[in-house]
Length: 407
Image (tube, rainbow, N blue to C red; front, side, top):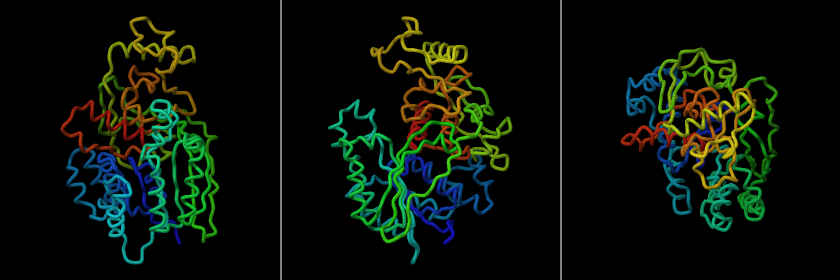
């Protein structure tokens, strides 16, 4: 069966990062299940893009990005089953019957689910989370048991394979027993599985992002973990993902038609193409205090002239030292090195402050679009948080950064 006919369900879909990869490879989404309303709108808008592109009607999407038509008008240009594939719901034992009914209604008679993808929220498994709240609190967090509901989806839809992604902290969670618990649960559902550790930087992404990727297959099928082809021997640098974008200051934006051609990396990676929509969105920055901008300027100078990170508090004046903890997180102000092969990991904390993601040339933290590019999201993805229409621009940017950092 050609891969174009493979159908998948995305659980804990977030802003749609996993779905993006499978959709671009030709897989067909049956449903995306996500508890965050803003992330659901991002996925719904993205699914509209895939549909319109398949019909040669990209101009409709371009009109939406340029504010020529409303979001409601965009959705009127796609079939109901496209936008209806996004299910806004938290996954739990209590919500499963309703979610199953929604998914069943999206499957035509005779259609099967070939693949289930997704990973439960990573906060409970992360080492940082345990350090802040304690291991016992994290083990008692209901989110740490969501793999059980994942197995319920496997039992109901019996896909040929599944992809379960999460942070490396899962290896040490529950005194290193978590993986075996998952293995036993998925085995009861009828699946073999294999656990591997990968870094996105080995596959052409200009960001270091380590993840556990568990792949499983039904016990009655002669399948296994696929051989992945690394492509980390390229010559691209971080600056190749950023240098075509307009310059910005703090609390600034520059959206609309592009002013420069895409770099070879952007075309090679599929982030931006000369053949696709010439519309830049979400190139917007957060406001920063005068004190923080002074620290950013020092961090940029030290990195570019001395080739090292700013050390907190050693490199700062007394008036710039505001954190009580001066022994931990000494690299809390960190420049995204433009000549590096990859950036530091973009995490959800970016929505709180930009100190760990300082632009290599401009005295500011990176924009939403720049953060998305480091994650390898294509430029024609438009993150539009619903609940923020009536709130401030600052809050809007903050929440969108959270979607990018969490995806």
